[in-house]
Every structure is written in C-alpha cells, then in structure tokens.
Image (cartoon, rainbow, N blue to C red; front, side, top):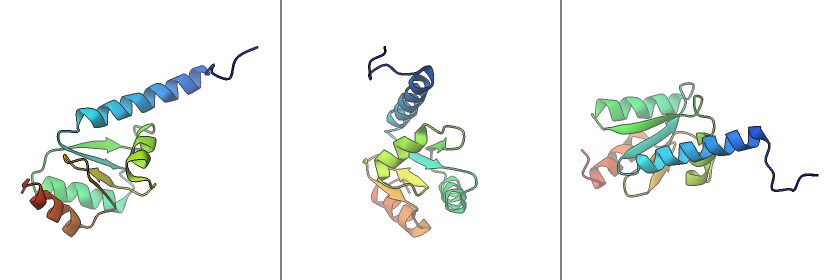
Length: 110
C-alpha cells in the first residue's frame, strides 16, 4: 500500500523539470525573460523586436521545455504567449510592439 504522498517516477521527473524551469526564470530575474514558441507569430514578432533593439533577454522555448508552460501560466495567470517578464517583476502577455517599447523606455533599457 502506498500513501497519497508517494510520487511515480514520471511525476517526480515532471516536478524536477518544473523546478528547473522556475530556476531558469529566477536566474534571469535580473534581466528580461520571454516565454514563447516558434509556431507563435506574436512570439516571433516580439523576439524580432527585442533582437532588433539589441536587448539582452533569456528566451524559454515552451516546446523544448514543456515544464516551463506552468511557470509562464503562474506568472501571467493565462495560457497565452508570449509572456515577457521584465526586471521590475512586471510582465506582458501578448504585448504589442508599442507596449514592449514603452516598457523598455520606462526601464531605461532603450
């Protein structure tokens, strides 16, 4: 008989992946972190904008790191992407280019 607190190896691996994804966000907390996926047009647009402005950021590919999906959802409260997290702990979900530019100016990053 097992207790309800016992986890299967798959559940333990999923929990470890989620912790690793959260650790990546914490490590990037001093900068900008963007959660996205290559199939997402808004994600590609936001990445192109950040790249074009020469902004350093950490990109978390939700296809390559599925555990990070839950981290992005916890940050934004939504399932939409991209989620862009800024150094002041604010975030945007599906931001327009104007939204991103305004925030970068507010943070004196451009």
